[in-house]
Length: 315
Image (cartoon, rainbow, N blue to C red; front, side):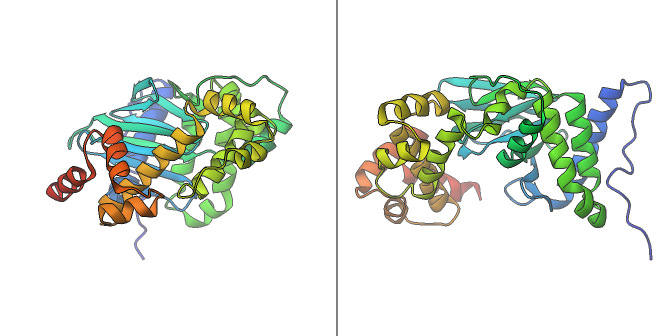
């Protein structure tokens, strides 16, 4: 039986590079080889590890609207732009994006080509792992930063990500070590530049975690009327305090959050599943198609019929 080449084989490195540069080059090489073999038509290469995937684009992308979960994205090649509310973040190779709360974002790959594609390694953050680690670490203060941050990729994080990717073609080793490496990745994030930003996720009584409980309800029942008292009770806050902290954490009011979630989900229904405009509107909770069309146009810059037409023409 002929042994298949490992993902790390064929990744020639410059011996004169610094250790950090070698790690970055190896991480790009391994990620590229895995992604190119497993990409779906949306440019996503899923892995056997829940919440870990690689993104790739061979050209600048269209604007992508989403409610982003807490995650870390390491940009290995190319550049991306992410907008949250009035804040815009441009970041590229050697930089990382941290999202610590479910927030509506508009993202776009801005630098990519067939010769030099965009690649990023993404891992969704696990609040339970963070809580466990924070309990075992020295007590450090949490930071009230925005739920989206950009910073340089730290070497310990890059090395752990590389070890994790190298296991993707070694199923037995991945089964035994994969979860441990994801936990280690969370540890290095908590120990490094992002530590204060992530720590709020590990405190079960922090404002961020309490608001997260309300966000979970909105996500699960976005097509139903919003009941602020139910959300405030879930967060363990009075209605006035809840409104204040919800906006501080997500940059939106609960109603704005629900509206953006409804519109993002309706867009998926129409462009991915082929649902009619009226069907999508009613399914996400709109009683009036006219109101849905107006609010959709305001958010996406064009009416839903135009979005559907553009999507069909690009196929």
